[in-house]
Image (cartoon, rainbow, N blue to C red):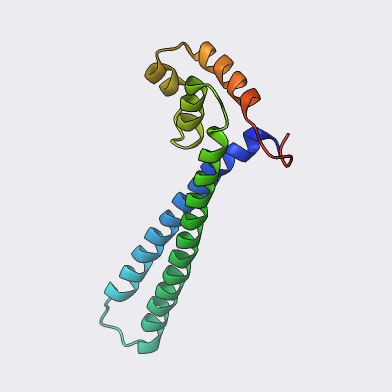
Amino acid sequence: MTIKEYLGQAYRLDQRINSKLGQVEALNDLATKATSTLTGMPKNPNRATSTMADAIGKIIDLQAEINRDIDRLVDLKREIVGVIKTVDNMECQTLLEKRYLCFETWEQIAVDMDYTVRNIYNLHSLALQKIKMPGRLQ
């Protein structure tokens, strides 16, 4: 795993969490629809309850999975902060934090730091070279 891949893990995990949150929202909508559908036709009363119970069970499972992912994201960000602090240049640290912890775009980082995007790319390359990682990364 390269240094960029290592640092990029937090963004990918954050995206997965957001995707799962969207799934929970969709399941909540499904559970709401399952309970609010009423017609004059007699039907099996267990069917709607079963659909709602299934949706609620899936929501609970997915929320537990999201909580585990959030715990992992917090731990990973803490680890990445430690790696970023090995860089001896404050500008490089700021750039790395904005990119890999705050998930800002290159353009936003350039505006915030008062650089051109090209200068940000160059500073990023320098910052990656300055990272001191244990032997597991290249």
